Structure formats: structure tokens, C-alpha cells
Length: 388
Ligand code: UD1
Ligand code: UDP
Image 1 (cartoon, rainbow, N blue to C red):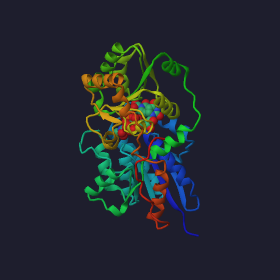
Image 2: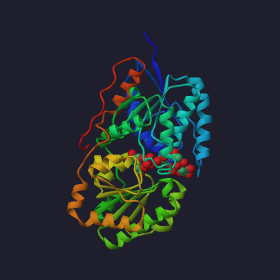
Image 3: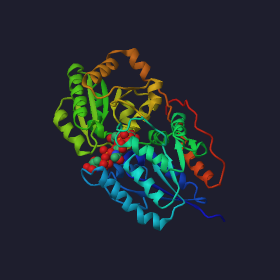
């Protein structure tokens, strides 16, 4: 019998866990050919553990790197050091990383130092702005040049990689497993806290807000929160649900501007299933998140993106997402337009799904098997797929 391929998945934050969960389930469904091992860096702690629970993931190793108020040096150093011994002990045939966090980049770098092939999930996203998002844009570029197998979610991402001289033979267009996770999640039962349920009952329209980008910390977030206060004064039927990221720098601004404001419901980060369901019921989404830019279009929710540039142009092109930056006036104007102009709202609320068809994990694992000459290459993902 041929030796099993040992694949070691490395991730550490909430969004990486959500997107890797379907991939790990798929790896585990090939026990005869794949030995799947999992390392969490725990760059996030509580927010990572929430996802591990939802998808019943049991890591083989936990580096427990998170420290309150950690900076980029802290995380990079701790991930590299933590992985050194594990890679030496496990000797995987390939490691998988996802996305653009410090865990992603440091994981790929550690594998490169050990001459272990790297597979990169969600490869090829680009804004071409070095500091936006920071440090994610550069993390992605560096990870692409460390990787040996690139799972591009869309044709746009594949083209970006080709432009940078990445070998086309090593790029597979798979769709994004965020949509696989959404498919799994929308079917599952969930419980919404009574306070959240009340927000939907007491307000005609609910806006879902999330913020956390490093380049938005401080002044830009303050502007956004002030815009929100203006909107709440003007629209008495508007309620806001705001699951606040655990980053203390985010919490400081929220406390300053939004604490105690009527019709703003501040909560701890929600578990993935209630979060998805709040998004499904919300009137619109205001966010600087990457993953939420992919989920909202699939759920038919207009999403206003609190950034100047995005690496996810597909939903903007399709008309469900709009870049609004963080300036108070612009945010107020664009939210007002969607609250007042039914036709503008309707145009943005059409479910489109340029990011996946729910089969990304299957293609990713097939591509891994193909890389090791254990099967044919997968068919490329080809949109459009509508809704979830
Ligand atoms: C990180 C990623 C970002 C990703 C985001 C997803 C980097 C540099 N940033 O940003 O790309 O979009 O995660 O949310 O990789 N904290 C907790 N508990 C948690 C999580 C965070 O207390 O479960 C607090 C800690 O004080 C921690 C701080 O948040 O030090 C910042 O966490 P960190 O992972 O460094 O940055 P994020 O802003 O979360
Ligand atoms: N999410 C969640 N609970 C929340 C907010 C977000 O489960 O309270 C999920 C969301 O569905 C998406 C992911 O977290 O899949 C996005 O993570 P985040 O915005 O932290 O990171 P990014 O995608 O910007 O890297």
C-alpha cells in the first residue's frame, strides 16, 4: 500500500478557522490516502475557540500564542518558534495555510525553512496597496512567493498570481471555502439570545456592524461610529447590532462613542451560527471585514465596505457591495440612500455569489492529491452561482 500523504493545516484566527473547517473535514474524509494533522497557533483565543466548537475541530497542537494587545513582532516570533519543533517532529508532506494573517505568513515561512511544500488557500487576493489592508496585503504577496500550490478562489485571483510570475500549472481555481462553511452553517439549528431577538422585534430595520482593521483603528473608527449616531438620530426605526471584536483598540473607541447610545446593541463576538443568522435577517451590513464581504452577497444583503480599497472586487462589480471608506459624511450618505431609496436597495440586495459554489474544499483536497500524483486535477470553479 502507498504511504499516506501527511497534510498539516496551520491556522490561528477566527476567519482562518471558519474557512479551513470545511477543508479539514474533507481531508479527514480521505483516511486511506491522507493523514490530516492540525496545528492552531491561537493567535486568537476566545474567537478561535468559538469556531473550533461550532465545527467540532480538535487540533493536534495548540501554540497558545495570543497575548492581550500583542503586536506583529510578538505574533510572528511566537508562531515561528512554536512551529519549529512541530514541523521537525511531524515531517509533513505539505502544510496548508489560509488567507493573509500573521499566522498565514509565519506558517508558510516556517515550512519553507524546513523545505516543506506549502499549499495556500485563498491565494491571489490583491489591493496593490502596500498598507491597505495592513499588514494583510504584504502577507498575501509574501505567502504566494513561499507557496508551491495556490488555491485561488476566483479567476481574478488566479490572474493576479499569473501577473506576478507564479507558475500557472500550480494554480487551481477552487472557489472560497467560506461558501462551503456557509452552506454547512445555514442548515444548522441555532439559538439567538433574547436581547438580539428583541432588536429585530423593536426596530423595523437592523444594521449589522463589524469593525477591526488595523488601518481603521483610532480616527477612522471614530468617524464611522459618529456617522452611526447621526443615522440613529435621523431614522427612529433603525436598530444596530454590533458584535464588538476583542481587540482592545477597537473596544476603546466603541466605549468612547457608542456606549449607552439608544438602539445600539453591543455584544461580544457572536458564535458563527447566530452571526450568520443575524446577517440573514439584517437590512444591511456595514463592515471592514474580509470574510463578511464574501458572505453578505451570498445571503442577498447589501454590504457597505468601510475601506478605500478591497481585494474582493467581484461583489463590487456585481453590485451587492460598495466601497464607502470611513469618512463620516460618506457613510451617512450611503446608509441613508439605502434606507430611503427602495430601488437602490433592491438593486444591491440581489443574491450573487462570485466566491464559491460550496465545493471549494473538495477541489482543494483533490488538488492536493493531484500534486502528489494520486489523482486527476479538479475542474476549475466557474461562477456565477446564486445565493446559498
Ligand atoms: C487578526 C489578523 C487580521 C484578521 C483578524 C480577524 C493579523 C496581523 N491580523 O487581526 O488579518 O482580519 O485577525 O479577526 O494577523 N483578542 C482577544 N481574543 C481573541 C482575539 C483577539 O482578546 O479571541 C485581542 C487580544 O488583545 C489581541 C488583540 O485582540 O492581542 C489583537 O489580535 P490580533 O490577532 O493580533 O489582531 P486582529 O486585529 O484580531
Ligand atoms: N463572524 C462571527 N461572529 C461575529 C463576527 C464575525 O462568527 O461576531 C464571522 C463571519 O461570519 C466571518 C468571519 O467571522 O466568517 C470574519 O472574521 P473577521 O471579520 O474577524 O476577519 P476577516 O474576514 O476580516 O479577516
